[in-house]
Length: 386
Image (cartoon, rainbow, N blue to C red; front, side, top):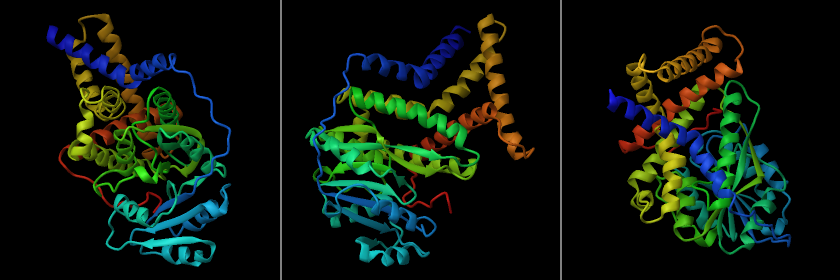
């Protein structure tokens, strides 16, 4: 019984650390760092915007218009759209805008986003490369806001902030998750560097970017590559990209599985990045990866074992009885979060939906981690909006 008790509290401590302890630790460390004052001097290097597209006929016109309207000198900006063997009218729409300076790179064979980005980089002429998705709509000041940080020669990558346009079933919980992520990223950037940029909006120095393995998830791999070279990866909350949430909770589940699968594969099976897990080589970066990524992906497993230990300990002490009730109540809320919209066809309730989304996210992350551990990965992608 003592072993079960010890295991219970170890698991409880790990779960607390994953969701609260790491954040509190970052808050504590941030007290010793003064926020740097931005250099107000105008900095306008040449910029290449690379947009990822696969079967985006429903959104690509809007993305082109949005990109052409960005507030940046037109003679210093280049717009490249790569089409990963699109089979709809995406290429046709892009070609219609060629006279406006939009360049199309069509890549045959469905090679995946990372491979396509490597190919697009060969054409790009800008000093700074901004990566974007076709469905990411930018605030007009974004390029200026991103590139101003590159005035500092120690900065190699800058990630913007993804925000969600109110959608349907996933918007409540997803917005809570992203607010939490934004706080963590802000603190990581203040203290050291981000572990990963956001694929919808991030910028890198072209001189630092090297071709990545096509099996790697590009935003994580690019960020880690920059950090390995000794440059900072910063977070800029004023550079905002807007996207619609996944249309269904099922689509969000599969998106999360795909992302964690690729990230796990990148960290565990690509030697360049696997070495970063060793705290004896880079203590701060390794701690960030374990705390912000791997432990969180495994949180569902810790919660399952915590629940089992708690069942065994019921009746031993009032604290175990209380925590058992709390867990049962939470999981009942999650079940209701599934039943209310799916079985009963009623409108989501914020509390029950958030509990359901949390549990589903844990399952998705655990599934993705298992896939990555088994050397499975996703190279090609299909947008959820299709």
